[in-house]
Structure formats: C-alpha cells, structure tokens
Length: 422
Image 1 (cartoon, rainbow, N blue to C red):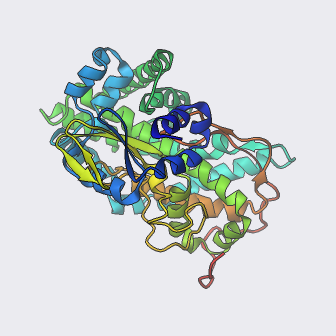
Image 2 (tube, rainbow, N blue to C red):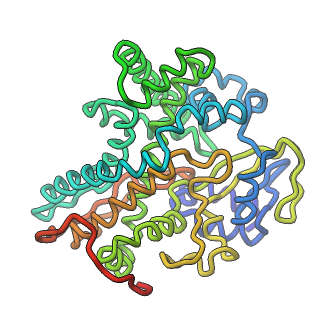
Image 3 (cartoon, one colour):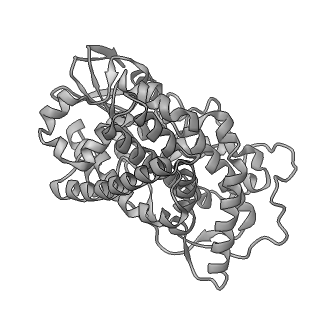
C-alpha cells in the first residue's frame, strides 16, 4: 500500500474507527513521508515533537486560509477556530493565551482536585442507582461528558442548567477539525458554531452587567480595557475554551475506561493503588490518544527525519501514530503504565501545547481510580459505538454494567506499597 492509498484508507469510515493499522502502513515508508505536492505526513515521535516545537512550523494563517477557502470568513465554524488561540501564530497567539492562562496554573488546577472528586462521586452515585437492576448505563452520557463539562463550565461561569446544551453543539462544531470535510459537514459545523457564539454573546452581556469570579468575566474585562482582545477574539476563545475544555477529557475518560476494561489485571492494580494514576493516565493518553492529529505549515524550508520540507509545505502530524512509534516506545501496541519516560504527544508540544492539559490529566487521575474502587464490577454491556472522527477519537456511546457498588468504600486513597508490574 503506497502513501496515497494509505491516506485514502485513513480518511475512510473504516480508517477513522481504527486508524492504528493504517499508521503502521504509513510508518513503513519512513517517519516523514511526502504524500503529494508540498504535503507531508509525520508518524515518528521524535520528528513530530521536533516540528511542534520549531518556530518555523506554524498553524494556518489568514493568507493561506484565503487561498484554500476564500469564503472562510462567512463560515461561523471556520472563523471561530481561526480567530481563537488554537489557530493563530505569535504574537497574536501569545497575547490571547496569556489572558486565559491564569485559570490554568498548576496551583489553581491542584486546588480543583476536591471539586473534581465531589462531582465524580455524585455521577458515580447516579450511575450506580440507574444500573442497580442490571440495566446498562451509557458511560459517555452519564459520566464522561458531564464531569469535564461541569468543570470547564464552572471555570467559565456557565450556569449548571445550561450545561446539557453543549454536547451536541460542540460535536457539530468540531467536525471542522477533521482533515477533510464535506459541504454538508461544514453546514453542520456552522450550525453548532452559531449556537455556541449566540450563547456566549448573551453570557458576555450578562457579565458586563454583573461581573463574577470566572474566566468569562476576566476575558470580557480584558476586551473592554482596550486593545488586548477584539470582540471577535473574545467570542472565538470562549467557544474554544469550552469545547477544548471537555471534548478531549470526555474522550480520554471513554477511551481510558474501554482500555482498562480490556485489561482487568492492570485495572485491579490501579483500583488498589490509586497513587499510580498519573502513570496510568499518561499511558492511556499514549495508547489511545483522544487527539489523533494536528496540522501545520512551514514558513521556511525545514529538514526533519531525512526529508526536505520546502517553505509552504502542508504537514499532517499524526499524534496517534507518533505515540506508538516503536523507536520511542518498544512494543507500542501493549498497554503498559510502567513504561519509562512516558511523554505522550496527545496534548501537542511547543507554543500550542494544550492550555488545559494539566486540568484534563487531573480529572482523569481523580476519576478513573474512583470509578474502579466505587464500582469494582464495571463491565462492558452491549456494543460500543465509535465516533466517525479521526482528529478527536472517542465514543458516541459506551454501554457498561455498573455491577454492585463496593460496600463502605473509603473515598480517600487507600494505603498500599507500590506494586510491581500488573
């Protein structure tokens, strides 16, 4: 299978559901391969890491966007992405990122641990009650979505009653992140973006009249203070902070639980030793990344992985493939939380490293061991349904049987000596 054929399979419905065999086909051609005129695909870990950190490798700017999609300004979805920190280069990217970064400092994230644990406990109680008679529970709808959306909405100051609105709107909008999108899919993404922008326009107006101790108020005040944030940037970044604040974590929780249910020995070790959650979460991120790819362009000629990338090259960085590069991680198809030097590229690297990565890790580190301890009988129940998405990999539905809750569980971390390998 040549590179073009492999890419065609990767973009197909089959490739989106299970991209890993296709990654290996592409890897066979080298860590960086040319896939067309000025188009390159990266599967190597070292090469992807290097390019993500290289100042000459940038996200798409307005000039190139005008060439590829002349009417992009008329698309609420494309313009929302384009005007956010997600798809801007320095100095605009640095300016916008600094305004939001205060909400995601290590100290503030650590202070949210009890909040995350409390929300997770309530959701587990609800799942246990719903599945007490053996009825399957959809883990995505009942836990993987509401936990992270509750956390990011609390940061943004979104009222609790409004949180159920966002799952469909965000799912529609994020179609714009796929490497290929049809006009019909773009129309769906535009509809989602329009709903989200309308919602945040109302929230911005409310915060102007009644400020609160939340990130929305802080960004509104930055906009109103002068030239630090335009009106378009304000709405675009609120949309992206909300969507990015739960989409990745939702997929991490769903993918992670699926992996652990398939590896009961490893799950049992984490159940008894939650202090090892950081290593487990990083291995879950590596093994089945919730973000599978990102794109860049080269502002200058770059040599990487034995390949010469001319200025203006379009680069497809397959993060899911890089995380399974055998040069970095021997036997990468094996789930092994005891690997040395775990540093998955699931949140990117360099200037665009995910602002909320620490929060996503915290949520998973708290929630996954808690699930395993509170519900030791967790088991698959029915056929899971993967999303037909490549960029954001996750489940639409993940039915589980909750089993009998553990009696008299101590909600604190149990004592225990560090185990060996599971």
